[in-house]
Image 1 (cartoon, helix red, strand yellow):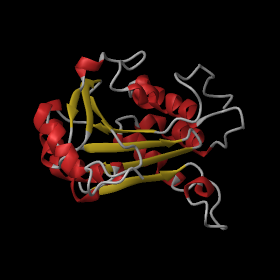
Image 2 (image 1 turned 90 degrees about the vertical axis):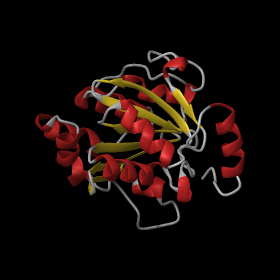
Image 3 (image 1 turned 45 degrees about the horizontal axis):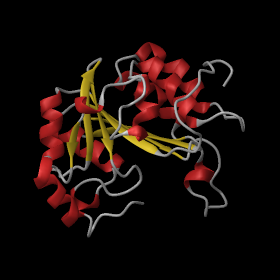
Length: 223
């Protein structure tokens, strides 16, 4: 990725993490996530975006066995706002789901073979044509060409999807500490202190959340 910089990404290689970015007031986001029995952390508002971090990046994180991308759709429809779900898998795969209210505008897969290893015909980038939609969704339509180039670039063996995400954050104004959210519940490097996040377990806080999480664990899966 010679064009978009080579700054060091926090943490070891091979990380898996996810985040929801919601363009709405934080209290509204908390309300919907609590109602949907979301499990994870909800951060402060930064640049107009509220970041929610699922505690199971690839697993069920809300009611009705919803995963991160499913929750993004629910929140966008409930609040009539822009929501993007981000998933980085072992630093080998970047997935993006983007919604504008009830309309899905982004469904991006950086490497189809990594996403679908059992499909011999899966190859290359999927959803690159959605890059202009992502630029508009994030309020940066002028970045459409750069986003298309960034999301279409094939990584070398020495590059990671976290590096691509850092460049994406820079283009659309998202907090760069997204690549370090796997550190929760400890402090996020270069990001907010842990106490700035609200911990939800099956939509609840405190002791009630711990009890609700135990019940939810019966039906929720990590992958």
